[in-house]
Image (cartoon, rainbow, N blue to C red):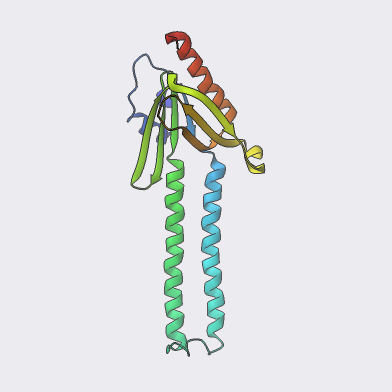
Amino acid sequence: MNPDDLSPVGKKFFSKVEFDNNEQLHMEVRKDPFGLFLIYLGGAVATLTIFGLLVLGGAAFDTGDVGDGVGLDGGSLRALIIGVGFFLTIFSVVITAVAAFLYTNNVVLITSEKITQQLYLSLFNRKISQLSIADVQDVTVRQQGIFAHIFDYGTLTIETAGEQSNYTFTFTPKPYETAKALVGSHEADVSRHGN
């Protein structure tokens, strides 16, 4: 694989990674689009729920009894609820956009020498990990649920030698192909350099 063939996110991440002249780029792994669909679906449900509560709240103002117990007339209370509802709607849209950004910017690059992972934990908390391909002990794929099987995504776990923590990458598209590429890179490294 040529670095020019990477996605825009992959290219941006690749510029931060040490890459030797004799090193070959094998694969870029990005999260499956189904996970992004779930993020947008959750955001849409939250926004529509807020909107529905505003409509129901507006219907309560028509009775004329709302606001008597708190010392507000119906118009003031209606304005307050609409203002809070508008804020919550904007908040829901922003949270959905941030979650989508974080999700789409997670990437794993597999080369002949190493595995490099960029993981966004929050907007201002990014973790970049590099693991020598020789340190790979085991690669596990877990597909749970009907959607994981229908859309062919899963959780890829790379177990490492030593004290390093395992690498886990959720919503990996075609996880068995990715696992096969990782094991192939590891075996090629072992045959080149020995155990």
